[in-house]
Length: 309
Image 1 (tube, rainbow, N blue to C red):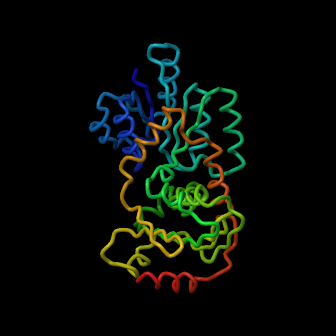
Image 2 (image 1 turned 30 degrees about the vertical axis):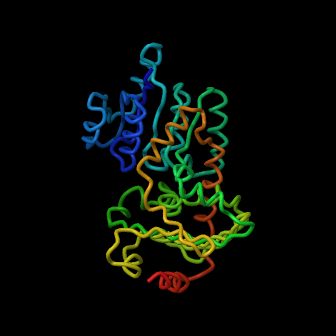
Image 3 (image 1 turned 180 degrees about the vertical axis):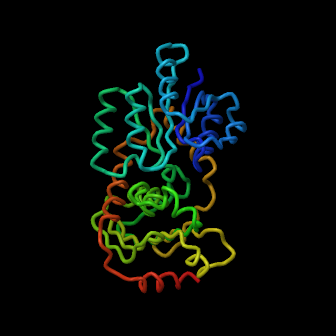
């Protein structure tokens, strides 16, 4: 029997990955919600799906459907701005729905405990999307780790002026660059190399984050940036730059992302989906980073970038 889904944030960047995953797992998106009405992408996947721009109306729709066992909705998917995730997870669980949520589950790690309590009380589950853990190259890297590892993670993905005018550019709503473009990488690193012992911020502003982190089995140097000038210093022919160096060897995981959301759904349906506890450590790290003082300067960053020319 097909599982029935609703989705919050159907006009967002990541929503099509979830439309695709729901479609490819032979399930149905019965309704979605977004404050914006530019959601023509729905026609390519679920043209008969109901669409709401009023949250109260989709909540009423779910409540009415869930009174009837024949039309009961099974899952709520959350693809909205970061600062809305926690409250919408709680809403979904309390509306008798299992929840699938994009990163992060919350901007405040202290509130993760509340979500767990609601899970227990409602007997429903919240599944975070941690797709990098499912990437074949990343799983292979985890099998090959040594007792002590030296790792570098560099990710440059330029964003235009719109970014800083949107919720993404407001740290209180997005959690800053480490949450917006980095939290999946931090989760990946923790999953491979163990818990974070300490970290140091070498440089940080609204466009970039540069630091050193000590994990149980690795020392990691990270560099995240949305500044096109940083990309131009390395290559003017690329739209983005992603590189993971483990013990001197480059790990290329540029490809292989197309099916990771679909695989995430398949794992959930097999009762092997990731848990709230799995996602909480990365939430804790990015929270600590954005509330810490930097100990370096822009010179540290410029010197580091130059080695990749």
